[in-house]
Image (cartoon, rainbow, N blue to C red; front, side):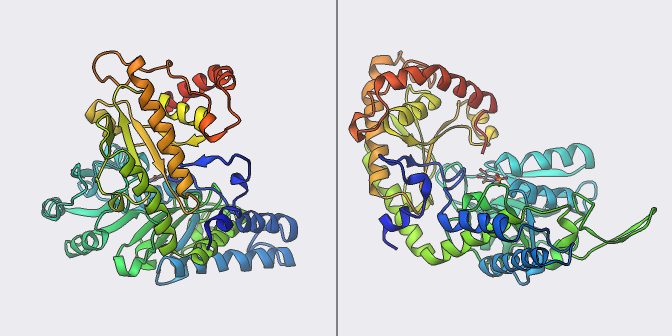
Length: 455
Ligand SMILES: Cc1ncc(COP(=O)(O)O)c(C=O)c1O
């Protein structure tokens, strides 16, 4: 699909000059067919599935199950009964963690670069149910040490729970090899697919994973849509997180009988509009095709990487080659606070990036760093977006010597940088506007700092 035509499908890109949205690793933009599908639900058949016998209910039930079958096909799950609709990937990981039949002393293996969504749940289980956590140390350059994995697996590991692609630096783990080694040792495998599923075809059967957690809102779907795709036999072993309406086949005042999977895991009235929207998002991705998606985002990432290859003040996180960083360009700048950099780019250049710790506090805490900046590309980010980031960062770097105190403390620019006015892109944001926006933006930065950059 031609890029201009593709971009015209995203209402959030309509304003002129267009915003430069480089935060899709947090949440992707939503195309028109997804918005229409959600609206279609509320306008035309706003019922609840599986409860009433009228036509609205029948229609939503049909579409909800069609979405389940589509997710199973899209992710190579053996059967739609392995697909559970949830609120987000965090809930999917919690469902596996908290629903697993742990015995004291069992071990879960994670990496030292996991999102909080794949860390905190294990910490609580360790405290409350005697789970032991094995931590696999990942290399700085993205290489993977399979022997180290084998050493960890030899220690009564029952579940391996790793990201597929990192939200920090975009590296992708050799998940097929990992799953094979884990299964050889009798462990099952949960993959956090948040950053892989939007960018490459994922086939659960081929990878050999038992569970795969997905965020609908990172792959063109609406917020509040998460999916756990699993082998039905693996799902059967889990206890539901929540009980109530829809999860039971029968109940008396003293007992109940649970429904089969996946219904026992979907308690209460569901996010029908969201699931139907997420199905439309899958169709949209399939229409564009992952080959094209990869080509667009790789070209943007390569362009920005090449522009700063010889810049000694910009420190790239993760593998140096853009093709090994999926859609992510994450970096720190000598002497520039990451939140200042993000505000500078937004105010002066309409470039939206992410700053902070990206929900992986443990990574920065171990290195004594205040976080960094992350630009993440997706199928709508063409050459102009990459160039806008390059222009913005170049201007920022040009200004740093004026503000930098000796040394390279990342906090030295705090509150002192001013964008030149966004003139280069002819943005509506003028110097005065940027200044007048500052108190509000400072407050926003305070909030970002206290949340330490979630997502
Ligand atoms: C690698 C990774 N895991 C988990 C999550 C949490 O996803 P969700 O918001 O769907 O719970 C994110 C979100 O940023 C992520 O990047």
